[in-house]
Length: 396
Image (cartoon, rainbow, N blue to C red; front, side, top):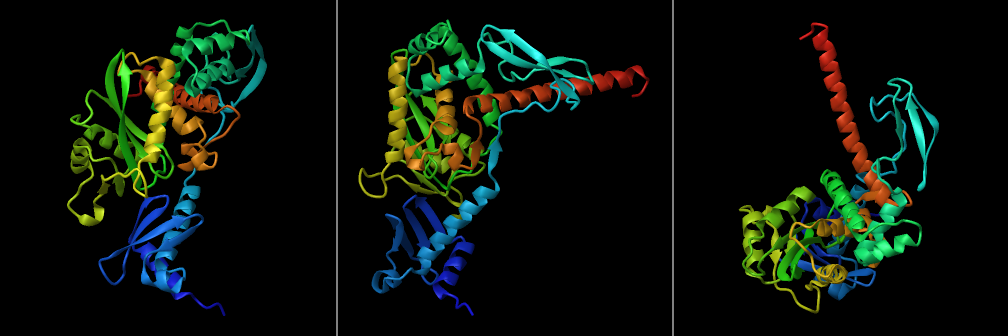
């Protein structure tokens, strides 16, 4: 007969009652079951330590550490069950009538490669599998390589020069047009995806130059997954109203954080009071605004993001306008394409339960974004067609 561990049982009870708060990867606050005190459970290496008497003096795994371990396990199980998998698009239905009676019908040849043609046996129309890249002069691989090179740090002109080596004679303006087109498309698609971010968010600002004028970019970053939740470009550093940034964060994540970590700027606190402060204490976001350079309350993760964006700005030689698609494009690149050493080689989206399959993630995302648009247009056309058919037959 297996003997139960009373500390484990009490740890499960603490977890079930949600009496712990995750501050960051390495720090949890666990509420005492007998007093109003909160114990600190800290990760050191691959183990947790607690400042309660049971762990400090008896050197055992206390109920508070068990509670944290159970909480981590539950989060991982929930994330696995709710994982969103985005696969490359395979043609199994007509893009016009959505019928499944389709067949291959040769190849369409051009100087940039061959594209498979299909015919729908129901509506008799022809179409290709070049979803998302229809009527584009260059092939999907070349276009997405250009986007990858640019967001990895190359300038627009260097990208154009590099692609000439593989026979793509384009200008830097063409590269910018591709970025603008597909950033807008992917931005609308990603709006419908809710990332499984943690309950601890960080916020900070950095200055950027727009046509020589200094502006400030405020950002919300998930502490656990490094997912860039929202961003806002502003004119000032300390006086700017950034409530919209916090509203956008709630909209993207579908929730507000339990813990918000910022510096001591007054506008962060004002936005927090307006958007995340609530009357019931149990539902109130904890605002940590005293950031240290050392210890557990530092903003190193935000500083790392700021460094990435500043490196990106150097090759752009300053941004031209505040509504530039470049910043949104880099947000997509940071969240869905770029792998991070701090996430063991994962992208932030993968850490949030969003898995993108395929050798070229850019193409997978663009295909799925375009397919959703095409299906919506096709369904609308079908509904209109049915309406006029019914109307002509005298059916109201």
